[in-house]
Length: 163
Image 1 (cartoon, rainbow, N blue to C red):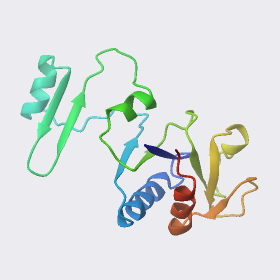
Image 2 (cartoon, helix red, strand yellow):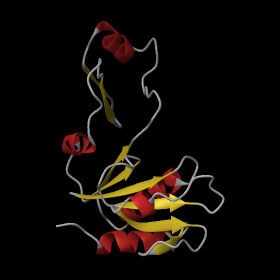
Image 3 (spheres, helix red, strand yellow):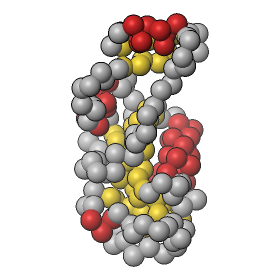
Image 4 (tube, helix red, strand yellow):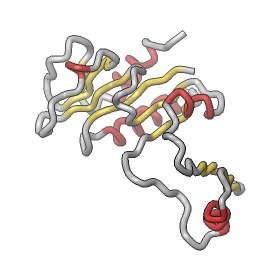
């Protein structure tokens, strides 16, 4: 499975770029999965629902299934957060996985950086960043794309396809 990460600081445009790349890859006939890392408490279930009650009762995993989709909610219950590799192993077959976040992992990543950011770019300290998408001429030694050049970024991703 091919993996490309989209990383950057908060409000840099990571989700916008990740969503656009997912759409572009999908529109080219490829199967795409996604992993989004969050640094805050995440709960896709709501208090009062049956599945929420199952988790509250102590279930480690609950699958909520319907005619359009299903979701698996896994309670860590004090266990460590899974690694990116462990999460990738749980995904179904696909051509590409777009990972948003996990900026400290060593998978190939594209950094999204804006000129008005109060944070320095990540790429000088991260050799796994393979390209930069920016709203200025970043001094990255590799490919630098305009932050809105989704076609060019996707072409670059596909040319880097992993074995």
